[in-house]
Amino acid sequence: MIRRRTVLSACAGLFGLLTMGSNLRAAEVSEIRLDWATYNPVSLVLKEKGFLEEALKARGIKVRWVQSLGSNKALEFLNGGAIDFGSSAGAAALLARINGNPIKVVYAYSRPEWTALVTRKDTGIAGPADLKGKRIAVTRGTDPHIFLIRALQGAGLTEKDARLVLLQHADGRTALDRGDVDAWAGLDPMMAAAEIESGDVLFHRDAAANTWGVLDVREDFAKAHPDLVRVVIAAYEQARAYALANPDALKSALVSATKLPEAVIAKQIERTDLSQPAVGSAQADSIRAAGLALQQAGVIPASTDVAAAVDGLIDPQFNPAPAPAPAR
Image 1: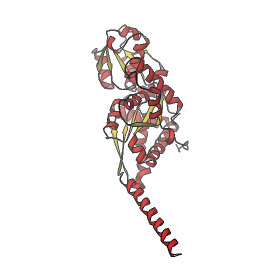
Image 2: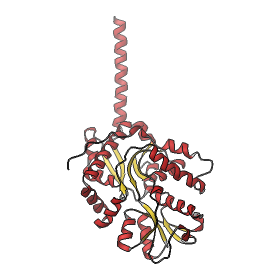
Image 3: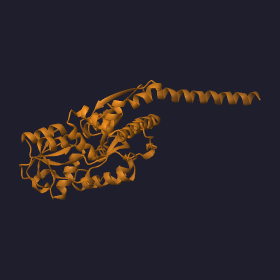
């Protein structure tokens, strides 16, 4: 009996140590860092409404917000450990992972048509074939860049047949309107502003070639803190449900963040589907198609197993349960 009590006591002590160790690991996270971006409307609602701050308050974990100006910046921040969660296009996330950025896609914040090829109405450019020898503003490593490569490829051209001018998205629009470039691989909401405010023309559109808007997490963070990943996604779901139930609030959040007119934001929203947050085969198919096109274009090495890279990128284990509709 004494021996049995001793064993039980030892087991209880070991369990206590393991529990204490788990609590210590959880306590190590004093702050969760994530981005907000005007191309991720749900992030703006999440930031404005404070759903994540409220969810983490009892744990004593703070939230720090960092603005991303494009997928490339969000992925740079993730790779450098400056943020834990970042917003990007699916194909941009694939390129980053292939290039050694250890990230996982855990959520789809939108299915957008957020990129197209844009020109001024007086350039005479009517299709991708007309871009040969032309100056094109583009943000490397983003969905607009990948969209441009695929559009050129469809016209029998490559990046080398044009003159790429590397600028962040907003600067690309400015360069187009100043006449410094002939075309721009655009991104909403700046692209919508170019249409409405400047009369610029979206001369090449292909909704299917826009890859999903996805939330990426650093792989080491997801492994160490899967419970916190679920908390973040649950808060995102609150914000997404709120945005769908309160379209005027969504519009207001975008107007406030971008300082753009309501008509511009309305055009961005009409091209943005927020109804499909779970990640899986739909995102995999879209990202794989983009990856194979980039491989054919020589952007991704021929030796890369694109299908395996996509499988390693998308992590559906955190897919959310449907969120209840919030009160208006």
